[in-house]
Length: 369
Length: 127
Image (cartoon, rainbow over all chains, first blue to last red; front, side, top):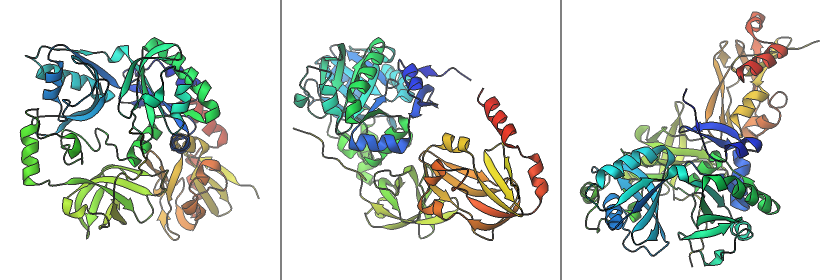
C-alpha cells in the first residue's frame, strides 16, 4: 500500500480524535465526534475544516487571462480585482475535466483551486492546452494549506483573530495579505457547505497555529472541528456538485444543471462546440432532486425507476441531517424532472417510492451586499 | 439460567438464552460505522442461514450488511430501531438488538469467538 499523504494538520486531527481515512490518497478525518453532530454545528454555529488537500495552480503572465478564458467554460472577463468565480473546465466533447474556483489576484495573476484528486490531471491538462500562450502555470499545491471556517458564527469567530473588517468582504470575494492569528493569509468568503463562511489559504508551516487559534477562540461560540463526512452531507443539501458524482468526463455541466456557469456567448473555449450542440439538440438527461417517500437511504449508483422501468441513476444520496429524510441527486430525462413527479428508487431490489423535489434541498440566504 | 455470548469475525454478536438467540452488532462495529440512520430489518418468519444476510445497517456514509451468526427462523424483530436507529449507536449490545431467532443448531456457536477471544481479535486487527 502506498503511504497516504498528510496535510500539515495531520497531528492535530489525531490529537482531536479524528477518524482518519484514505481520501483519494490523503490521510484525512472523516469525522471527529460524529458526522451528524458536525453537520448540525455548521448549520447552527460553526465548523472548522482542513481542506489542505485541495490543489492550487497559479497562472501568471501577459496572457494569463487569455489562457484561463480558453480553459474554462465560465467567463472571467467581468471579474473584478479580488473576485472569485466558479467554473467547470471541459474536454472538447463537453465532459468535465474538473470544476474549480478562480481568484483574480492581478490583471496577469489568477489562482485556480481544484479538487485534490484531480490536481495532477488538471495540471497536465492545463499545461498541454496553454502551449502558445505567454503564461506560466505553476502547481503550488504543496506550498499552500487551506482551512475553511463555515457556519453562521464563522464571521464573528474569524473577526476576533484579524484586523481586516470582514463586513467589507463580500460573498465570492477575497482579501489577500490578511493577517489571521498573526500569520499572513489569503481569505475568501467562499465555502462548500451552503453556509456563510470563509476559506483561509496559508503557508503549511502556519496552518497548525491558525487552526489551534481559531478552535480555541471559537470554542465559546460552539466552533468544532468538522470532517469530510459532514462536508459531504452539507454540500449535498446545498446541491453543490461533487466531481465523480454530479460531474465527470461523462457528464456535461449543462446536464449537471450548471448552465449558469457555462457562457456559450464567449468567443472560444474548450468544449464550446459540443456544449452549443448539446443545448441546441436538447439535453437527454438532467440533474434532479429526489426525495424518498418510503424509508431508506439513497446511494450513488442506485437506479431511478418510472413505472418499473429504469430511467436514470443516483449521483449522490444521503439521509439529510437537516431535513431528516432520504434525498438524492439523480440524472434523469428532463420529462421526468419536474417537481412532484412520482418515481421510485431501486434499493437492493425493492422499488421504494420517491418523488422529484426542487434543488437545492437546503438554501441559506448569503450576504451578497 | 446462564446465557452464551459469541461474536463473529464480521463483528456481529449472538446471545443465546435457551432456544432464543438475539442477534446484533458489536460496539466496535458501531464505532466503525458512525452515526446509524436507518436499519433494514428482516421479517418475522424469515429463515436465515449461518452467515446469511439478516439486516442492513445504514450509517451516514454507507450501507453495511449484517450477517447472522447462526442459522434459524426470525421470531421477533426490534421495531424500535425503525423509529430510532440512533439507538444502535447508544446501546448496540443491549437495547439495540436487531432480531431474535429460533436457533436451529447450537453447534453453530462452536466456530464463534467468546468475549475474550473477540477482544483479542480486535486488538490484533488494529495492528
